[in-house]
Length: 384
Image (cartoon, rainbow, N blue to C red; front, top):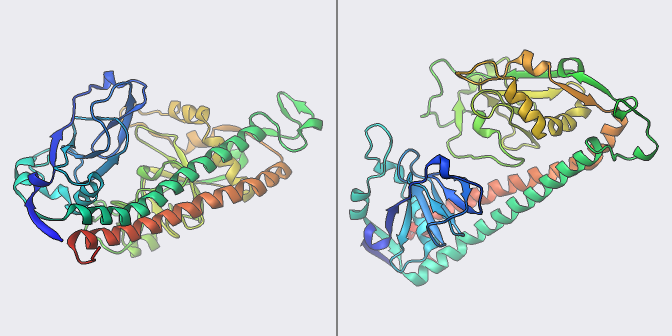
């Protein structure tokens, strides 16, 4: 049964807490910003469960935190659920598109006064529990997939380090070493090793945010952990523009390198149709591929090492706008194993990576199904 109430009768939101950057120190409690977890602190302000949304800057995103946390001053958190199911409140706020209640002339700011007076329609408490049961089943599966991906990613990284950092690859017991590396392995610059390296572009005047059909154009925000991708607010470019692009198109199994900005040198790899079967990158990302295809996975895990990230950070030549150039990338040196060892590595690592991206695509489908159900359940179009 649905009932009409004011938003303030549904939930009371409070401003988050000030925490200067200098006070963010290593700890176990999440420091929650408007759209994500910014850091971890050794103190907390709010007991779980905590529903958090943006107060200023980024509006519209809603988070559900199941542990003690510190909501930042850029966020609003649910101080009083008014007897409603906290997770139902979380789901309901997602359907409200809170960004439409912006009251800021410069920096977007959520207009709480207007929000509190809004008339809304919500389920009775018993029905709220049924709605939560349906939607949380999807979220629980998504959470399980994400945890499995993290375990598989750690397994893959450990395997790489065992073979190519500690040199405990198959047959290492009888291998001869020269200058600290197995005999027959050599050190090459990337240009000697052989790579293709290109960034993409965007249409003149930038991306048209009103475009509803087109080719995904990915930027630096796409460079995250294995199997991680935020499908919200993906930019599209016209198919005609994509067809005319000479560079920056996915080959189906690409390493992406964060080319300029604060996190230059961050890397990830996409494959098996994740996140899209076809996509392009913009000018802030390098697409990197080994010309000898067998070395692609080895190349990714090598560049993903912390010491290579630090190296690429130090290659920046522009103090005002940090960035990597193609000549800088080409001069990076790495040890190149023999092809036989790399092929053996691929036999083990490729099934792990395939499982990671299979789970990531499964998560994408679960998310789409949940997001289709969400507004229909909340509006009462689907009975519970």
